[in-house]
Length: 151
Image (cartoon, rainbow, N blue to C red; front, side):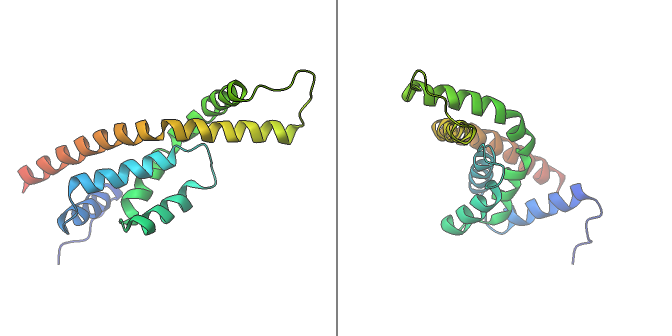
């Protein structure tokens, strides 16, 4: 039995090594990380974790890479909230201009902003996934080469 890892970095490396060692290819792990990252960038603070769990169950993928991708982009999600809401609001106004002279209530305005932000994210999600996949695959391949050289 291998010795127990001491720090969080060693534990993370061990988990990743176990995931790669049990037959999961780097491309499959990169796909799961990219999907988790894409879901994690959605402008919905309450739903990314549950959506990742649902996606893992639906696709029969391991939960760990999806949730890891989701949690790793959380700071980026917070930074992108305002641009998503502003861009989404502009997109909704472009598709459905507000009626001149009408005063929508606060909840209607928030609903338009949230809906527009989600619409904008849905339009950008394929791009987020593809870019994330390339980044994660490159990092995993580099990590695997370093790990093989050290062995």
